[in-house]
Length: 397
Image (cartoon, rainbow, N blue to C red; front, top):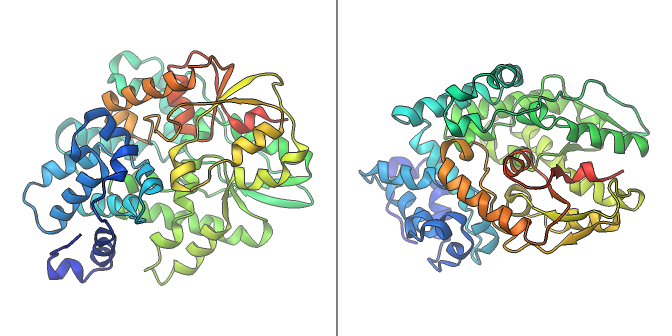
């Protein structure tokens, strides 16, 4: 793809990287075949190829930034297009560059809602307080926001455990409040194997929410805060483990995000290199694990952040099968469930359609349980599923 960027933009690190990514696109359109939003709308501009053209126009000084923003805001950043692309176009990175170029500001209700989410979600104390109070005021909230108020509030890990070796477990923000039992389950499993679990007292949000909303300053501040919290503990642990694949894919990217920061680059790269998804760690221990619910038939939903973002496909399935579960075939397993971080709040109609389609596929063969690997997918699917939706770690004993 040919580009004609202004000299001042191409002179920046961001401009050079955007130019490199855009020039790797050969316009083949294979990406549209696996894009969830393109399949919903049939509009070229709601697929990766169309968005790439819009982003190119944006960087070249297109006046109609509103049109670019509209279609970019509809993007889930599921990165299914990257799995499909024969040219290796780093679409997710390009989309984030475009979002940071536009900035987080939006007008009207959308702007207020985005600012509120940035104020709320990354802060566990605020999130827990709103969850406690919010259930009494759901009738006053917009439907998309009321749907996010959990019926049950959970706690993060309260104690560390010791073992012959140790891992550092990321607690996340929303996960502590909505699905805290996931990390408790993992801690219990690892304790059986004499593997200790510690947490970082000053760990904060991974930064993904601000990053995908285009707030570069706030996102990188969160990343630096986590590097400060995690790096000093690296020498005492075997790995940093994430049970939320959406957080894990971001932490694994810390090295790239801070590559130009002379103070943090080396430490950020070390934190990223030490971070693994729980499936990567557990897969080496799977022979010692058994089914907590023997005989149950499982429909497995691999989150986009796991199968496309981290390119980890097949590990969870292998562990669950080895534990004795029957995994049912699921049509269109590559497609997003519609959660995508704040997407279910900011784009509720599209998110709802995607969830309905996903649940139709997951429940087609009448499973006993649905399993997934990310807090957003778990809570989003559970709101409308006919069967329990659990993190796959909760299925092991």
